[in-house]
Length: 193
Image (cartoon, rainbow, N blue to C red):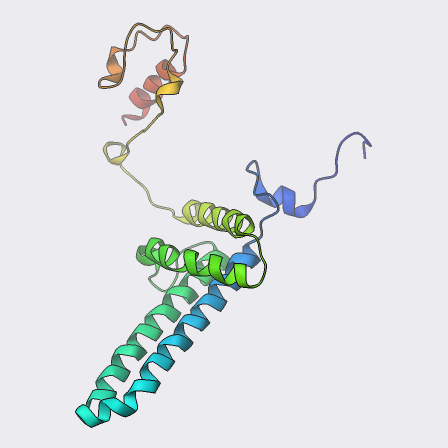
C-alpha cells in the first residue's frame, strides 16, 4: 500500500462519489423506528384516556374512536416499516412506494426532535436522510419515455458573455462550445428528450 494514498474504509467506498459526511443509514432507521413507536404510543394514549368519558356520550363511541385510532396506528406503523424495509432491501416493498414522500415529510421533523432529545446533532440526521433518500431514489427502477423527461438546468451553465439568452427557448443556442449547453442539447436530440 502506498503511504501517500489514504486508505479508503468500507464506509467511504460504500458512499461512492458522493460525500455523506460519515452518515449512516442505521441512524435514520433507528430514528424512524423510535419516532413511529412514540407516535403510536401517543395515539394509543389519546384513545385510551378519553374513551372512558366517551362511553357516557354513546356506548359505541369508544369503539368508533378506537377503530379510528387503531387505523391511524396501523397506517403509521405500516409506513415506517415499509420505509425501513425499503431502505434495507433497496427497493419498494409492501406498496409503500407512493407514500414514501409523505412518510418522510411526516417523520423527518419528528426524527430531528427525537435526535435533539438524545443529543444527536441535526446535521447528522440531515446527512443520514440525504444518504437514505438518494439510495431510495436510485432504487426506483422506473422506465420513462423521452417525452416524459424534463431537463432543468440553472442559468449559470450558460456563458455569461453569450449574447443569446436561452431562458425561453434553448434551441436558439449557437452551439459555439463556450459553455455546456450545446452538449446538453446534443444529448437531448440524441435521446429524443
